[in-house]
Image (cartoon, rainbow, N blue to C red; front, side, top):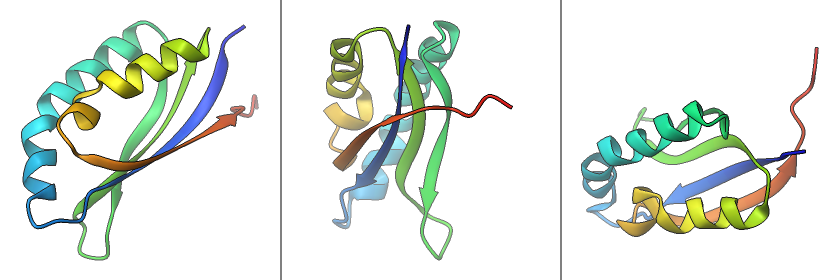
Length: 97
């Protein structure tokens, strides 16, 4: 049975951080589409600051093996293109209501 995780990833805070995010975003969204098609991506989106600018991401995903989760986190464009600075991963269980 797949394990669910909640991921909270905070972007770098340097002056070019938002530019890197916007440059990587189309590639990140392609990865997310593939994860959704495979059933790994449940829900997610951008964390916004008080001005409404994207400063991070929060997602709920599920994987059969933790190594699949770790591979995605290493290879996602937001990781490889220095968008996410700090990534928190916690086991999660979506409520079935």
